[in-house]
Length: 222
Image (cartoon, rainbow, N blue to C red; front, side, top):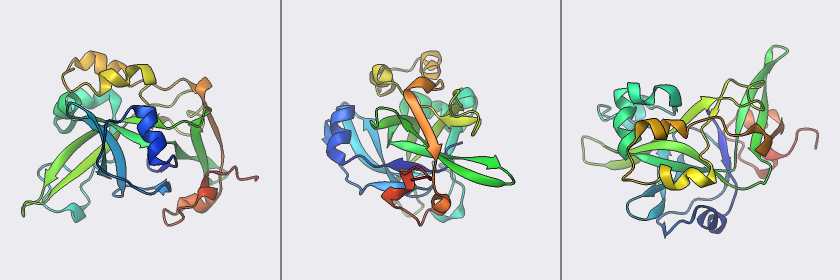
């Protein structure tokens, strides 16, 4: 699963990296993003748009955001089998802007946090699904989930799952609102090449989402 991640690049860098055409939202950098918080996603409605969205997909039948029925992750392997995700795979795809993510490894009876990022230090796009949830009172909220896949050779020793990261050469397909070939889309949701990523131990301060500091992504021995 992916339960915590980082967005450290400034908005201007995100716009350049992903060729964003419309910027409808700005959020401060965050080094410890947790479920139900606002994040930045890139959707496409003719143009690539950077917007705020709440992490945790809310099913249409949920009446209140506070009732806890949110889906923070969706398994790539079964997306087309679940009614909650099947239609969104066709019509509700997005990229979730990130610079890295945390995973915890069980060591000597405790969970130890590791940070995983691109060696290039560039932002990456987690594959995501989003919808517009509407409350009984008519409030409309963007909500989303992160698609996960099997851990690559780098991540698997820490955790068996990782976010599905869309490679630069496949972003156009993923964000094409007219593309609906399920087999091709699922084929994009593979473990990202481990040789392009790196990981290291970080402080256990990241265990609490309240600790949102740039020092979170410093190696623990630093």
